[in-house]
Length: 85
Image (tube, rainbow, N blue to C red; front, side, top):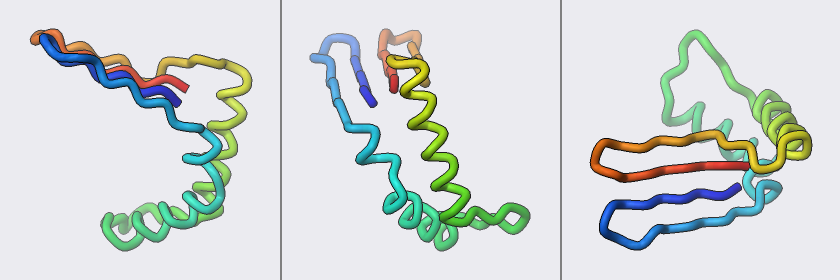
């Protein structure tokens, strides 16, 4: 996963994170606990198994579409944020 943040008049910040490190079963279980604790979801219950399945699909998508642009935001001030797989 690559994150690019560019503010007008300043240097761009580029962050490269290994996707497998972010999207694995350990982070799924930690994320499920954090969502259950801090987010009030009365109608929807997310389990760690659901998040593991979601993260497995993200890894499959990364293999099929390398470099897929997930977020591309440009403000009127010239600030840019891009997130790609």
